[in-house]
Image 1 (cartoon, helix red, strand yellow):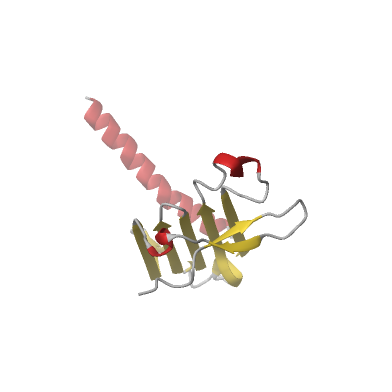
Image 2 (tube, rainbow, N blue to C red):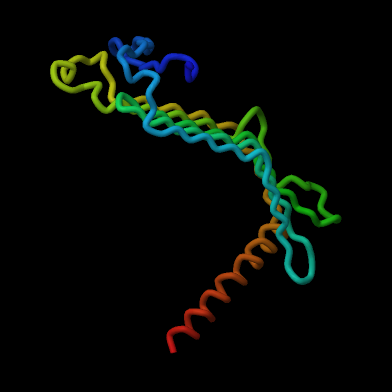
Length: 170
């Protein structure tokens, strides 16, 4: 059974040239030491204190994968959307943080541990790895009252941590 398309390695030809893809040959192209897929469709967090609701934080579309092979390691991660909402009914601008476009980020990393060993060490068309990062547009609306409410909420944890540290130190 095939695990999908053949693994490819991007190589730089010369300065200014675009990378070319070379199919890996050999017996280990379909053999994986480890495969990991992780997906989080949606996660919602409501931030509130004893008096009121402060914020709603939504994280959507988190995908990641990791493939370990003797000839290469491939890591992929993508986050499609993150939204931070001010839930105060009197707020005009509800979205404090939102994404404009398709995704927050998309990250690809491919490492080729033996690509530049031996005679290939001086071959400038061989690469040890490739990295790709695409970052979307994050729109942030500064809402002072909202930010102060969030900071006050978070400060409660710092105060509790200090009280716990003082109690355990005695």
